[in-house]
Length: 495
Image 1: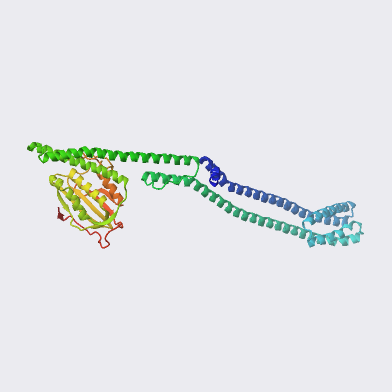
Image 2: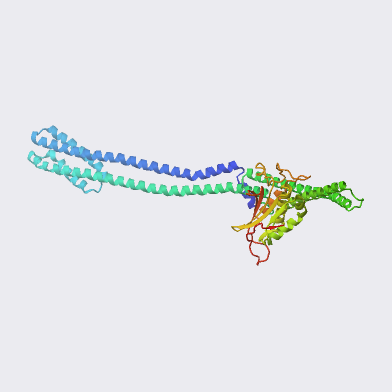
């Protein structure tokens, strides 16, 4: 049930997943932009209101100062000229002053200067009804009115500054809040980005592991099904089909090689048996010319059998890529390989210069024997008649280096990059009636890689062709713990 629900909510396509990821990742950023816009609008509104109020209140405070001066001037002019129009002007200015003072009182309701101004206005309001002498005596209140009006203006400015400071502090608070919100929402966006990146990359990595498994041939465990968009699931199904198809082709190839080897070995065994019977004189004594032809047939049969065995070795190596490391004497293994090619070396007239040993090293017997056998066979097939075959062994920086070099024609530069490819035959041809199969060096290189080593063609200052086998000091799976490591060995002994 849970799996069914999970599959129901899984994005159906990669495009849908990308679009959902884009929308979800942009959502916190959109919220952040909205909140920042709201905060900016509020700060702008408060600043606009505060500016308008500050201008209005400052203008009103200045107007009060002007009215106080006009009241004092009209009163003093009346005291000198005694014109009724001057009293009318005084009364009008007094009424305006009282109204503006009432509006200013809303801004400073508890200011002490407001109480004193109201007391002064009460004294100055009955000024027009006084006798001239009392009128002149009451004029001494105007300096106090001007002084208190200036004090009111300063209190108004201080009130405006306090309000601006409050708005500024509020702006700092909004700024801090925006920074916190920015950090939180951007972190949420990053987490969502990582989440959706993982949701996209995880099936891609699974497909990559599938491809690497198919390419390396290591598909022992059943692959885990890919969970992701429909395109990647479909690609995983195509990889399943490709893996099964490759398994079928590999099985067909192995079956073909087995059947071909069997079909070739059966008539070859009859041919070699017949040539052996003729050589034994069962059908009568052979003439020297017939004996020469029989030797040619027998040699070609041995060569064909060797090629078939190489093909079987290549087939076996492709099927089984496991090695069994044990400590062996390389010199003993080399003498066993040279013993198999003793007649061929004698017919070639090649002089073998090897090392005495013992050279003990952890290696796989079968794989190393394949390598040495192929290198010696190549030296016999392509080397110079009556030439030199030199085999060296040395230890360098914890690695064993075996070199098989021979005199003769050097390998062409065009053939060197593809020298270890299977079934590749370069421009230099084998000496003899039969051509090679082109898999000997490929099998040797694979055997070297199985032991975490390397087989390479190197330059030798004295001989035309030199192959170097480098093997690491791998821990043996079994062996004698009293064996000593390999020592430097030079080609002083001759076989």
